[in-house]
Structures are given as C-alpha cells and as structure tokens.
Amino acid sequence: MKVGVLTGGGDCPGLNAVIRAVVRKGERVYGDELIGFRDGWKGPIEGLTMPLDVERCRGLLPKGGTILGSSRTNPYKVDGGVDRLKANLAELGVDALIAIGGEDTLGVAHRLTSEGVPVVGVPKTIDNDLNGTEVTFGFHTAVQIATDAIDRLHTTAESHDRVLVCEVMGRHAGWIATYAGIAGGAAEVLVPEIAFDIDEVCDFLKRRHESGRFASIVVVAEGAQPKAGTMVLQSGEVDAFGHARLGGIGLVLAEEIEKRTGFETRVTVLGHVQRGGTPTAFDRVLATRFGVAAIDAVHEGAFGQMVALQAGAIVRVSLEEAVGQLKTVDTHLVEVAEVFFG
Ligand code: F6P
Image (cartoon, rainbow, N blue to C red; front, side, top):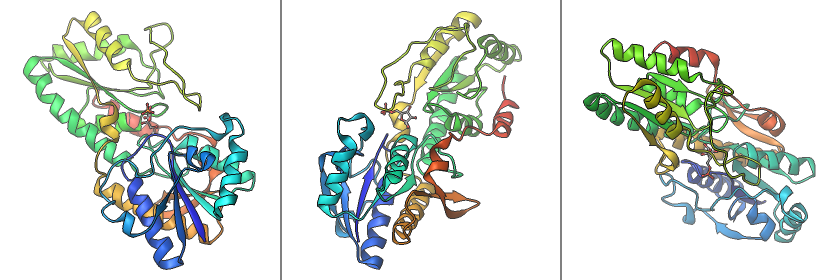
C-alpha cells in the first residue's frame, strides 16, 4: 500500500516517534511505501510531500517537534481545499492516510472519512483533552517540564516571600495545570473547567501567609476564566479553527493578587517550553505503540478510527467519539489538588 502520514496542530513531543514507528512497521512488515505530507492538512491540499523510509527515520525517536512540519490549516476553510486534497491523494496514488493530531486535525479526519477519504487517527496533544483515550502522547512530557519549573519557582518564592504565578498551557482543559499543580505542591490550581473567584484565591493566599507560610505557587491554565464580572481579560486573535490565541491570564492574575493582598507577586509563563525538546520515556513508548497500532489499523481497513489507550491496552475508537466532546479534568483529580489549597 502507499500510506501518507501528516502531523497537524501544535507540535508535541513524540510526533517523530509515531512517524518512525509507522514507517518501521509499514516498510518492514507490510512492505508499504510511506509518504510524508508537510505542514498538516496544508500538505495534501498543496501536494507538499517528502519521502519517508526507515533510513530517513534513524535517530528520530528522542527528537522533539515533527520532521513533517505542522500547521493549523483547515481544508474546510480553504477555497476548494477538500477537492484539491482529494485530487492530490488520487494523483499520488495514496491508498490511506494516517493523521496525527488533536481535536482539530482529527475533526477534519472525521469529516474526510465520512466523504470517503480513508484516514486513521493518532491522538496527539500536550493538553490531554481528546476523548476516547486515557492519555495522549506529549502530555506526560509537558507535565514533567511544568513540574520541574514549579520546583525551581519554589526556591525563589521561599527566599523572597513571594507569590509566584505559573501559567501553563491548556486551552479548554486543565490537565497540565492539575497534574503539575499536584506534583509541584501548588497552593492554588486554576483550570478552565471551573470559573475561579479571585476573592477566594486571595483569601486562601492571605490565610496561608498568616500561618507563616510565605511562598505560594499559583498554577493557572491559560484557558482559566474568572467568574463573570470579577476581572477583565484581553481577547486574542483567532485561528482557522476559531480558537483564540491564549496566554496572558497569568499576568492579569498576578497583578490582581498583588493589588488585593499586598504580597509581592510575579508571573512565569511557560508557553512553548512545555511542548519543546525530547519526549519522556513514557511518551516515547506510548507514541511508538500508537504508531505501530495505526499502521496495523490501516491494513485492517479500520478507517474513521483512532488508536487509543484504555486500561493500559491500545484499542481503537471511532473518530466521531474522539472529537465529539472534549475530555475535561476529572472532578476527583481537582478535589485532590484542592486538599492542598491555601
Ligand atoms: O493544542 C496544544 C496547544 O499547545 C495549546 O495548549 C495551546 O493553547 C496552543 O496549542 C497554542 O498554539 P500555538 O503554538 O499555535 O499558539
């Protein structure tokens, strides 16, 4: 078979490990020809390709980013995008596509499958918010990076009696914030799922400082929202999938905390550092398992399906289920974090 591979959305540690696994099993076990599409869905729309084979994938396993490049191109928002994509696949003789991405990339995969394009999905996102899989690759690495950063912030917070706000990624779901907050011993974790009350946040911090514990780490997910009418946030640019470019809540929050408590408060925005560099061992293994399972799915004709992790096993779920709703943070996990607030 001739199998195309693409990576879409934000880059994520483990993408190259998936590509390597697809290529290895595809070429060596199935005798496939693999072809890489560049820059997400832009590749098949514009016919941007690169050859993929075992030799080209040597040394890829620990490398962050994606050798295929990525973009947030949405074929349904590009003039004639879907027709051009189908024509290019036909012209290149591509029998099936493996799309590695998050809710947006796989949302497109789902729509294309219903129009007869044979696609298998692989769940990627540091945000861990894709439904149908217990975890996405990249999440573990992001949590480790955020936890390391929080550990380092603790020493400054303690030495200077400061409140340190740490803004992490998480557009719609606070998985990174909650995991890193628990792992890093945060005094507050603010997530998009629960609108926060700035008065309550400040009361917790005051109580903590009254009892002689000065250093406070507040972890805030970039998509966290204050209760209506309590704080003003800026609105940002919007991408091809209609998502606002986030980032900035940490600064507003730090200013507000300092104003309301009188405690010196600083902010650290981790930003793309969380998506950068080498994947953890967990993510390398998960990405490799997903890649192997994806090429198997192609050969079993499991189009419209996404490989997923459930109870430690690799399974398949429909793309419809995967993109139908977001997987938000488990309330029980938030309750664990809350035990340590204030
Ligand atoms: O979807 C993954 C993610 O890292 C989100 O957490 C974040 O909101 C977004 O991508 C940022 O994307 P970009 O790098 O395109 O601004």
